[in-house]
Image (cartoon, rainbow, N blue to C red; front, side, top):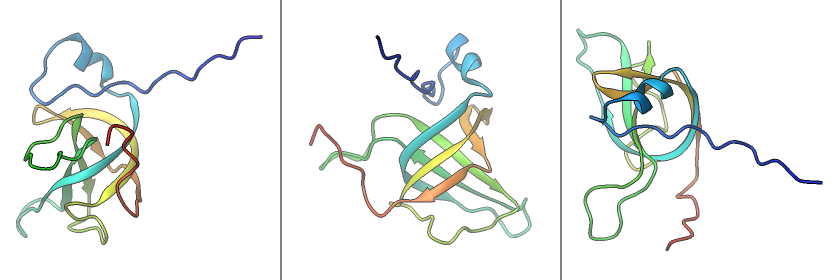
Amino acid sequence: MSASAEPAPPTLPQAGARGAARRAAHGALVQRVGLVAAVRLTAAAGPVRFAVDLVTEAPRPGRVSTGGERLRLVWIGQRRIPGIDAGRWLRIEGFLSEHDDLPTVFNPRYELLAGAPHDPRS
């Protein structure tokens, strides 16, 4: 009897990537664990939304940039979400779209995580 493995979630294309892979991922349900790399605030007169950039790998010691995937999370109708700050780890789930040439998930479900997940490479 052979056990069938669950298919891996689709890989998000990097910002600026083009082509069939990006179009194929559009609309896919994605689940990721990542680090909030940046919080993007909007002006009081602008649209009511809260956006963050999430990366799936934290920077290594002595490095500024991260590896892994990068995607934008946008919550429509929120100016702030308590607990979601730069440096916080999240588990998210939502449908992938593209906005301003970036992989984006609007109104994702999220879970605040206590710390960095275990990294087997460290």
